[in-house]
Length: 250
Length: 363
Ligand SMILES: Nc1ncnc2c1ncn2[C@@H]1O[C@H](COP(=O)(O)OP(=O)(O)O)[C@@H](O)[C@H]1O
Ligand SMILES: [Mg+2]
Image (tube, rainbow over all chains, first blue to last red; front, side):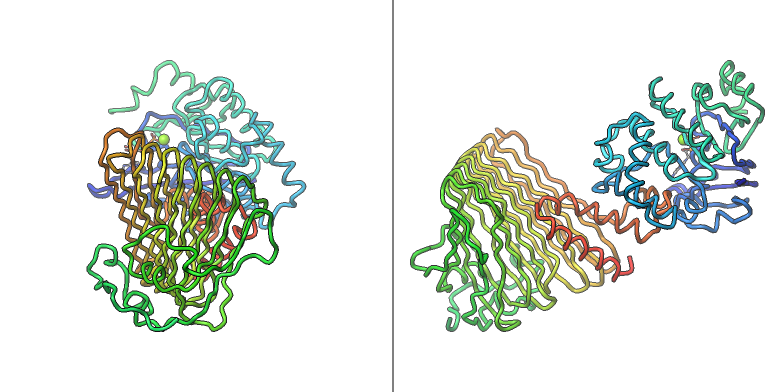
């Protein structure tokens, strides 16, 4: 049983125009087996929250705390956070030229597991993860995210989620840019990871359609850098009907 | 060989061609003060192959096929008593790569060298020059491709730390012939190579690839010159370099000339540099001169930068430690070119060497 605890988190970015405040005190607790949906309009700070938890160097934490089972996440380096059990499926996964998917996956699995996976079982593991996500085996010879379609990038992110078996995963708009079939395949991958590892999920999304496949236990509405309303799955239905108008501008 | 003739124009360092080169580190190759021995270090493979003749012939039998305004190349052309000749018969597909290596009698001795590689009509071959050890060497390599021939020409500069190498690798490419080169420079004190291409008939193509990795104090210079003098030739240039350590200096010049007669030319040149530490300097000067508008395409790009934070973040967010993430990124950066060598043993040796340098530099 793991718990990611976010308390009063305040985050800024430094731009040419100086430091701008994006997150203005976020409180959120996610435990193993739970699914939390964060929904909010574009620009409300959802990706900033995701990147800050993962430790992206662009963001400066100006207040609050993040702990994983009591350990101070904010003091950890990016790789330490991943090894502690955090995972971020990125909205815009990064191209790494010249590094093959197979080399990347094995390097990551070695780092996370603390030892190189046995070659024979590893090959099978990767094959299985790829076929479950409807990915062509030739995929593993391509360079990480290079020339991937939007859907391929997202499948690749979820494949890592299944192989690296984190405790808590943040999925940043994993649904965006996916057609209906890809959305279903990717969602099933998330559900498999949940069931296999009692994963806790923080699902960031703009739309409600992914919630048909990944049922949230809690829904948080995000606007202007903070959570403005919280509730159960029924809150998503309300957003579906009314949009974010009542939360923005105010 | 006796004293060098002195009727050459000694560069002052202000000339365009020499302005980046530290002349005082050329071992006297440029001004004739070097004491040339009679060493002939280039050697061919021990086992013969059908259609490949390797010999050392006297200069009278093999006059230069081209001229150069480079003083060191001119000296080599004028003063070398013999030419190392690799001759590939027409209509032959040479089975195994032809490896040429250096055998050095006295470490640090000085040498001028001429090499000729001729590829017969409709032939295919791979030649790999493995430069290692310690020499002060001025060299002119002329590569002559007959119509419809193919040559992959790989040169490895894995010289010992004090070595000095100033050379021209000049390809003369006839109708519908294809020249592919991979130039790797990772060792030596000063390496200055002029990879040059001369198209003599239409339909020919040249791909010039290169990687270099300069560490503390090393000066690695590559001055590409592609002369599109005839119609419908294609050239691609792609050099990638990394620099690490104080006063590591690399120079990449990409001169591509499309003459008025060269209609239908298709050319693109690219140079990327990765700065791994402070105190290193990469000069990169693409230079495209176009005298006709009737071309298929002409372009160039040059970038010099540090590690991409987004790439490192992505890898580290998967648990990969910083040093390992950097290693992956650098390997990935070079692999596009190194994988084109086509020799697994050499490729792995170079990659392991690069890993070692990164580890040493504490990257
Ligand atoms: N590096 C940055 N530089 C400048 N502004 C930024 C940067 N990152 C985010 N922002 C700004 O912060 C706000 C929140 O961005 P983001 O977290 O990406 O929102 P969301 O993911 O909810 O669409 C936006 O107004 C965005 O323009
Ligand atoms: Mg976002």
